[in-house]
Length: 242
Image (cartoon, rainbow, N blue to C red; front, side, top):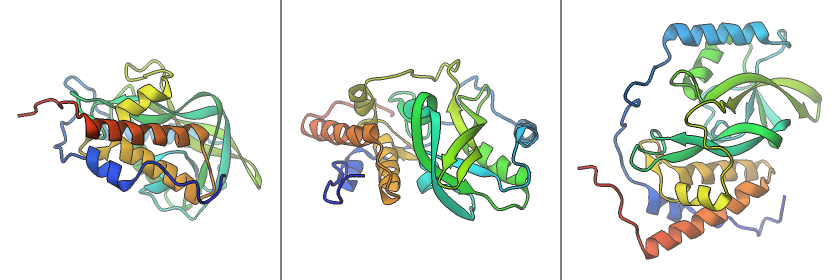
């Protein structure tokens, strides 16, 4: 991690420039929504595949789960997932984007490595805990964000953790994009959950607070800040939603 004086370029003032109050457009027309039975089947399948059945369920957090886990956890520790990297590779037209101005969210994609956090969940009701996590991360089928058990490294040794990886067969998979292209998307996209720029700032801030510096995200936040400043000086028209 670099020095404390190395301040973020992307700020709350930038986020305020991008934010727009928007209604939830709902699922895309024709989307097949996961049912209660689907979530129950996914949770049971994950428990059946689990190696470390006596210990707590461990969740690998690499993005919004760091700053908005929405599920109780007993402890957290740094962890490294080899063979995967965090990437803005998931196109979205809901949540932090719209059909008119789609956004991007992060998923784990193949290759490289990813430093994140390992969250230990309480031992009670493992199926219910998985159900809550799955409902948070997965909405439609086939899911673009696939749950799977990962082998991660911690200071205490190797561990098994649940992570969410991109489904490369999904039509929402954006592939590997140049950082400048990602920055232009995040500098404009906003949905009823907020903006892509806010998502990036919260993730970088959450990692930095725990002593984790992701070089690509650090470069990306600079590019997004610059793109927002350019748009503020010479704004592009947004789609008319009236």
